[in-house]
Length: 218
View (cartoon, helix red, strand yellow):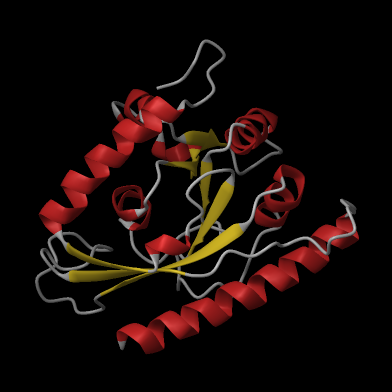
């Protein structure tokens, strides 16, 4: 749910987490590794690879804290519009500088909440090969550590009910990495500083993904 200003609330995200737990554990077999690495309190950003349609709901149901995801506005259609807003998710227009979405995302961090971001922007190979600068901006501007997350589902086609989803009751590994600070520690927020932070973030996320694949045998 949102408050009077339309900003997402912790209560809404908590409801979303409850729904995610029931849905994801009912349809799939999540194996969660390293959830203890997510700070128990204070602002934090979960940076998630994006290769399946369930990556967002899977994180909502397996993360140890309620998560507010930045979600493209195209997903807010029909009954999904009030539902997604109701569970504390943030609508973002990717075709422009969406100042409302930016304000709401920073508000989540200022309130000590958890912001979920797919830094690749759209669902693809899920390998962090192409990162947008938005993740660095929120990390530096919001003063929040980043926790890399790898969601690794089955690549088999057998048993799939819907394209883009893992097989029903298939195992999905969710691996949380160590939290890290994306800034250089000098307080700079210039374009150059954000570009440098993006490169540091990409290296950290790629290394975590490779480590997660070795750990899970994916």
